[in-house]
Amino acid sequence: MAKLPDASTCYELLRQMALIRRFEEEAGRQYQRAKAGGFLHLAIGEEATIVGTTSVMREEDYLIGAYRTHGHAIARGTDPKRVMAELFGRVDGTSGGRGGSMHVFDHERRFMGGYGIVGGSLPIAAGIALASDYRSEDSVTVAMFGDGASNTGNFGETMNLAALWKLPVFFLVENNLYGMGTSVERHSAQTDLSKKAEGYGVSGERVDGMDVIAVREGVAEGIRKAREERRPTLLEAFTYRYRGHSAADPEVYREREEVEEWREKDPIETFAKRCIEEGVLGEREVQEVRDKAEQEVLAAVEFADASPEPPLDTLYESLYVLEGEGWYAVDERSPEPHRGEREEESMPEAARELAEAGAAYAGQPDGPRPNPAEQGDAQEGTEPEVAAEREEAG
Ligand SMILES: Cc1ncc(C[n+]2csc(CCOP(=O)(O)OP(=O)(O)O)c2C)c(N)n1
Ligand SMILES: [Mg+2]
Image 1: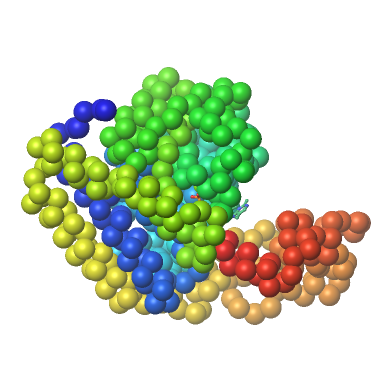
Image 2: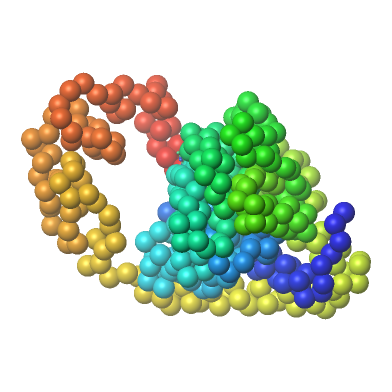
């Protein structure tokens, strides 16, 4: 077992993990009270993986996550008040209340989001690292993503370019054993995810993601290789989320005993215990950390509650659309009907259906096209209610 660092570092690691834990518990509670809208994905249980990683990053490094990232932002230094305000959809939120739980973003602290598309953040991570290279900066980009994301095409493409272009990027797979309700054994042919990028030239290792010190050491070495050797590597951290995938998860895919087993390895409890046993922290300090977390989170709720909702006439602000390139719903910052909507009438039938289904290539020249609405995709054969439920679980 790796040695504990000095007392102030241990205190800070514990402080951040306890704060994130308490923040997320409260976020879950506020969601139940309908204070927070949209989706809510909690990472309770994964704090050591998050804090272990950010604790060895420099200020100038970039972090990019998936959609379970309240803790990542807080660990990067974003004020919990602003994260809570984002969950509440208020103007003082990190994305002005427009992003919600999945799209926390803090450019100032180089926390680059917050992405709802599984694997979608991976090429962006490579892009950020490429930008650092272009600017001859020393920054490293750390990309944290789930086991499920390792199955996407983006994963392979990103690994290839990262290795080929020797990008200053470091990959961390938060392997919490499931992608929604599907276990790793059922979703990945290669279950040793640390090997999954080897063929692309990105070597990997495994680490206990419940041990904040082990994560720190593994990540520090990966970041060093990225910074000094321009060698991207991948670290697979074994971790676990105690709560469901999202707030709408009935958790029929795992046994209660399994959750209990992982709770026994709780990253905060085990670390606090170890710090006390080895005489690095006292009971009093551990309690102080918990009390402070409590106060900070209650203050965050108060702040979020007092923050106004965005004014209605700003509804169309910050929307990105391509002018003159096919079907779109909005082309100005005002709520009247616009060109995209008027075009609907003259569009070929198939294109309109595709457009309604959100397909990007709708509205282009006529011709036969697949129609997910009619010909079925992943939801083929499912009853509308079931499809709607799946949507819910998103
Ligand atoms: C491209 C894409 N496909 C499917 C989904 C639906 N979806 C949302 S979360 C998720 C599971 C991802 O699991 P993992 O990457 O392991 O992350 P975790 O939720 O465990 O943190 C899926 C399939 C999505 N958001 N994006
Ligand atoms: Mg997962």
